[in-house]
Length: 138
Ligand code: T46
Image 1 (cartoon, rainbow, N blue to C red):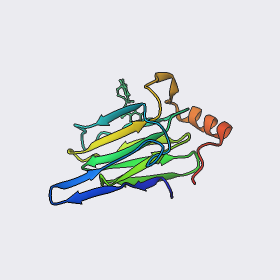
Image 2: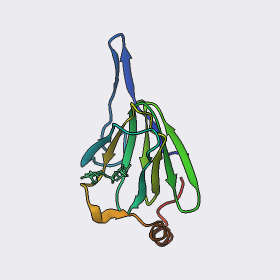
Image 3: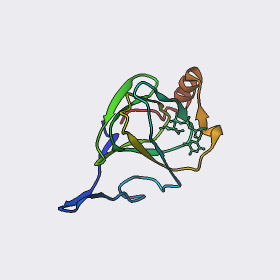
């Protein structure tokens, strides 16, 4: 599975630093950054897909399970390292579960926020993915 990318990191006796560069570490220009925190252990998030959005998801602290569903199969990624990120390109249903209470999930996105880009109905997602064929595992 190519969705998980190891990030270049620089560590010394002062600590660690990770650098992410658009069109280099990740294959898109970043237009938006958001992060999810103060999560609750048994509260899930997501449950939608996007029509036209690339995202790169890094769990900079704590951990959570990030589910990607291409309409045929689901893969659960346990994100627990600031040194790797999950690349999402194409139409995938996504869910986030099992957040640790200290989880900080940072997302770099290729587009500005647009409510219209969301597909919140699973049947509509399946119809869309069948039409576009974008949501293929690599
Ligand atoms: C995604 C997963 C991984 C904004 O106003 N601007 C933003 O850029 C975002 C992302 C959200 N919002 C507002 C919209 C809602 O009122 O923040 C509120 C919470 O968003 P939402 O319920 O969509 O959060 P999640 O965690 O279910 O999903 C988010 C992203 O929305 C989504 O694109 O892929 O994280």
